[in-house]
Length: 67
Image (cartoon, rainbow, N blue to C red):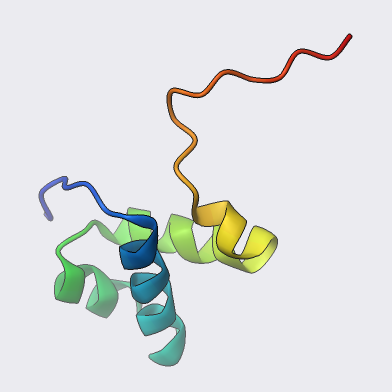
């Protein structure tokens, strides 16, 4: 199992690009970049749905209140 490590937006884009270039071979991308299979899968799905914005790390940010 891959160890957890922090990734930048640029790294996530590179990993997603690698996975898509290799016909969505999530395991190959996970091994190549030392991240988990599940994380690669998640990033590819987010990228396909939301584009680059889907890969932005939003942890720790407050939601905007709707009034």
